[in-house]
Image (cartoon, rainbow, N blue to C red; front, top):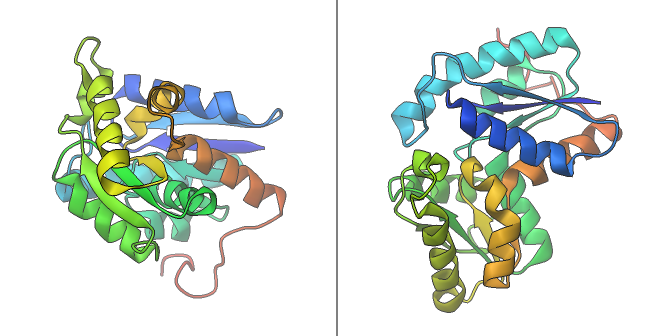
Length: 230
């Protein structure tokens, strides 16, 4: 099985980290193929960055369709262009927000999300509402760090994420935490140990969900909304 894990932004170090996390959790026999966004922002921090990342994302998925890729993980918590991605690709395509919050709903009765910048909070709230899980989400929180701070040694970013998780557990009375940025993927185990609650990373969860869908022989429906572009 071949799965494309694509980071829609253009920061190669973040892509490497994301792909390493996916490979660590993928099943034996699954090949993880990594890719970064082309002509895309260095990070996705708002609606404009998200829109600018989509053309390169779609171009890579069209290429993947010709390469025999079985499924795709779009590794940005804004789930950019997911509907369009499902139109151009025949196999399963999962965004990491959808995968993570649905996983959280399966292992807890409530969860909070910890993301990077405050401007990402309303974007994620809208996504969760669209996925029908607002009633399970206690709160979407910001650790007040730029996305690329997660790539900088000594930035203190991971400690800020940990501290925000601890506040979420205390103040929100939530039972699980969803990490609201693909750049946090490598922190999952450390954060779980530090905070004592289930911490869910969408990259690894989405990877295993795509594996499951492909193994079941399922592909994206081409009748209706996800039909090929006219």
